[in-house]
Image (tube, rainbow, N blue to C red; front, side):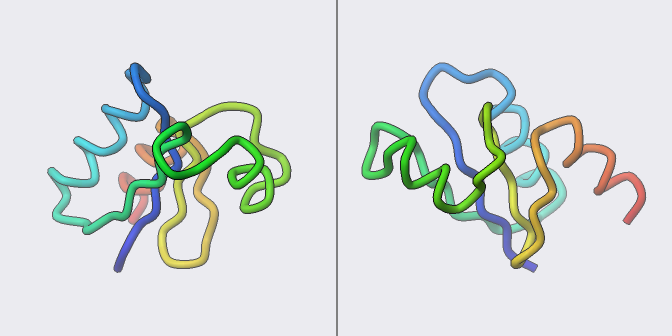
Length: 75
């Protein structure tokens, strides 16, 4: 299982999401806006995105940190 985390600098929810994935032993790729990726790239990947983080596990969009926490609790 691999995750993708769309994030940006100085984002506490992004940091919490990455820490939770690390704690659960889930490998992830970070796509940081402003560091190789743009807001447009995020909107292309997640047309409904209005905030970061936006988290995918595999090809499934989970949502933000709150949704990630809920998803991992149910799993």
